Amino acid sequence: MAGKFGGIYPARIVAEALRLFGQGAKVAVEVAVMAADAGALSGTGVVATGGTGRSADGALIATPAHQNNFFDLKLRGAVCKLREF
Image 1 (tube, rainbow, N blue to C red):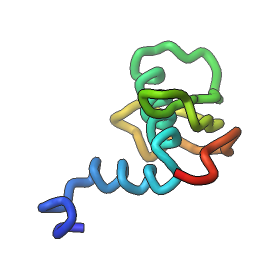
Image 2 (cartoon, rainbow, N blue to C red):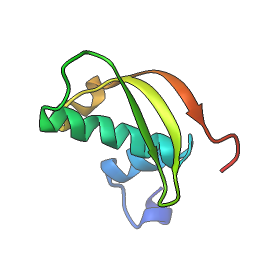
Image 3 (cartoon, one colour):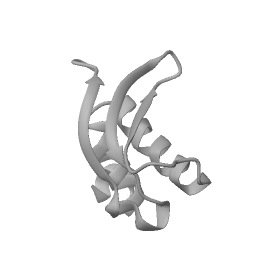
Image 4 (tube, helix red, strand yellow):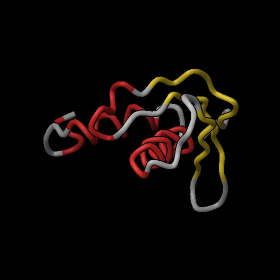
């Protein structure tokens, strides 16, 4: 990892791990965290979607968490994701 990224950065490692499931999955997690941080959520579970500049290509069911408690976020399932990316 240090060779690929020029060092070890925890946020970068998490982002690359989420990209293993596709760009949409990574963005969906980011959306869930941003919504929690903004106080825009009223329930305990959400369906978060994400994708690239072209379209949404992933949707996850999640129990979101605030950025400062990121690892409390729970992914409950995938509604959809790209088969190949």
